[in-house]
Length: 380
Image (tube, rainbow, N blue to C red; front, side, top):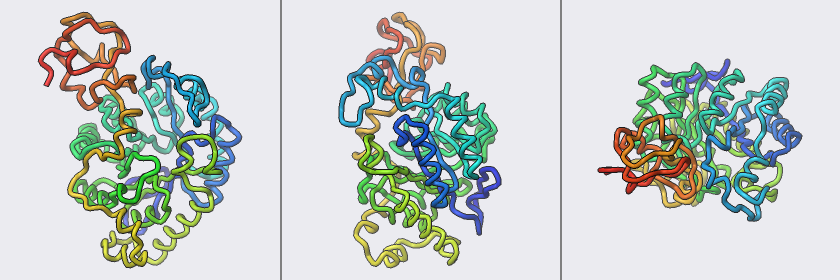
């Protein structure tokens, strides 16, 4: 059996408890007192960990992405940059929340959304660092993360099986064994028929030495129970104080009462030895009395492709190759003049980096400009 350790918490071996993460993300709405309230609730209902999302906006986004108008119902500013800045805690505020969590006796962690944020979080003595789905194809960030001593949890939303294989290869090339993968569908909320929970067992078979978990965004809480019965050893769900609050993640989040019911069910399964081995699909269907949502959520998985329901999120939050400096026509593309960011409009996706390196450009390019296939000589 694969095993994975976060602090003194062992995950994946027989008899280990499921590690449950309350993803606070940006449901705090930029208010540190509300963030503390969410931490309080997560601790009270029995979560093992609270998790936030750390970004350096200029490192994560191009200027055009930050400058685009953003005035919808969920906006906290006139531009996307103003909106994101309103929701972003400083590293000093993170340290306040870390101490608050530690004093309560609950793990505190965060997703590193760019290389600057990875360095910031690395300095905080966290129990682990998360790499979100938006960076699962950001091999530069993954290579850097693979070299640090902290455990990593990596979500796999919006990715193909080929990309997931590359993630594992990057970890193994750095001799990193203390990492876990989360099956994830990047659709908010995720419809039951898009959950494809059988991907959990597919990943377990393909990577038998890696702990596999589940990051869910569905509105039906017991689908996450089914993920655990299928063998997920880590469960991550967003938590909210009120689903009607302003913000795009609240609808796919669980209230404290919903989250508590999920945790009680998971602990019941543990106590009754239902998690010693992954359960069959028929057991799960019977266990939930033939519930149609559960049946749909299992899926018919033969691989992992980017789903239609993930395309909007991939377009909005997927990382692209962009110029890090002005590039003259004919100049060779290298790691010194390319970086990876969310761009507007999108460019070549992050996993195409190695396909670009060493090739000359067809034209002059400005700084912070997304690379397109037609910008690169003999690009295939």
